[in-house]
Length: 196
View: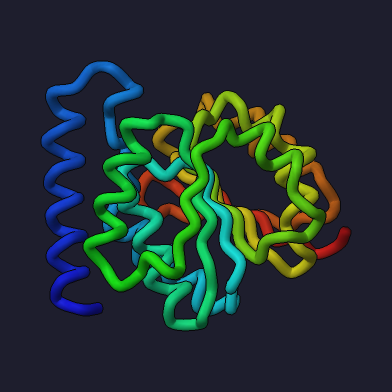
């Protein structure tokens, strides 16, 4: 990790905590992943050799930078989706402060419609950190875009367990996936696609 990137991570962590402490409007909160979740995602991308990564929920780009740090090491690309113009602006500025920008494709779009336009098996790893109540509806599209041998990771599996339960139950009953709940950060639900 370069000193500049380490400093940016620290800055974004502090900004996210300070912002979310005083901001009640969910649309203006950063809702960033935890530092250990960032490290975990970086490890997963590298271990899997996931050169094609999709992130749903950019926010200010904190989690994207962890994914892109790993993608840079293996010459990969992170496509990240965000619907909020305010957060797109924050993320764009944060990406420009690093050497990781060439490994990030920031898309201003509603996730469900974007996912449904993608080709089957388009991604090695998909990270969901967005509108949890939408995941069940997105599942057919998400299921299709993860390649066999690829990984789905969903944040907030324990911090918002009740909200996540319908989605987790749906994925667990899909015979094409094997799953695990990992107690890192706010809880990471992992689903490995083992068959098409």
